[in-house]
Each structure stands twice: as C-alpha cells, then as structure tokens.
Length: 175
Ligand code: FEO
Image (cartoon, rainbow, N blue to C red):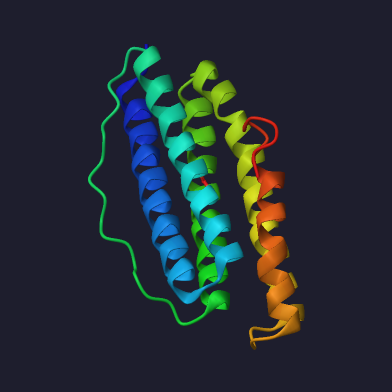
C-alpha cells in the first residue's frame, strides 16, 4: 500500500510527464509547420515517450493501492525562435525531470518504500539517457548550424535515427 506522501509525489510526476508530453507535441507541430521534418518526428516520438512514462506511473500508483490523478495540462509554449531554442528547452525540461526523479528516489528510501524505490530505478537510467541525448543533439546542431543548406539539412535528416537510442522499452524496429 502506498503511503500518502509517496502517492502524492508520484502523482506530481504524472503531471510533469503530461506537461512534458504536451510541450514536445507543441514543439513537434511547430517544427513540422516550418518544414523541419526530422525535428518534428523527433519531438513527436519524444512526446509519445513521455506519455508512456506517465502511463507507467499511473499503472504503478493504481496497482499499489493508490489513486492516480489525471492532471490538467497548461497550454504549452507554441512558438519558438529557432531549433537551438527547442533543444535547449528539451535539455532544461529533462534536467528538471531528473531532479524530480531524484526526489522520488530520496523520498521512497526515506519512507522505507523499497518497492517504489526499485520501480523508479528504470527512471533514473532513462533520465540519464535523455539528458545525454539532448546534449548530443545540441552539439551536433552547433556543428551543423541553422542556416539553410548542407549542414542543417543533414542534421534534420539524421535526427530521427538518434531518437531510437532512448527508447529501450519500445518495440524493436520503432524509429
Ligand atoms: Fe519522462 Fe523525459 O522524462
């Protein structure tokens, strides 16, 4: 049975995942409208990934005798200056997520809730991978530049291949 404070912190994380999913969906849509199809695919996939994280948390809370709360979602930012801004936003969002996941790890250990502590271990790994990916993409973008032409064209074209690295739970063959 989940203790109320652990249930509350897990439900906060449900909300954060929902918010991240909405933000990435918005970025994907923005990128698509600009013709950056690789960036759009990357963020659409990442949005789906966050939704899966949310679902995993919801199921865990309910299976442990708690009650998952389905959160309201704030309207995410709709317009962005450039591709660099959206990947900086990705990195910032994932860093915040990592901080929150660390709080869950800490709280569950403090509460002697080893089941939750064990459950969130996948999350710790996931966050590490997501932060590393955001950093890698920013470095690649730095090299490619955002001017129309060769470098950026290749960056955009190759991005969807990168996202496969952070979907270890996905069905094989997912791009
Ligand atoms: Fe589900 Fe990217 O944190």
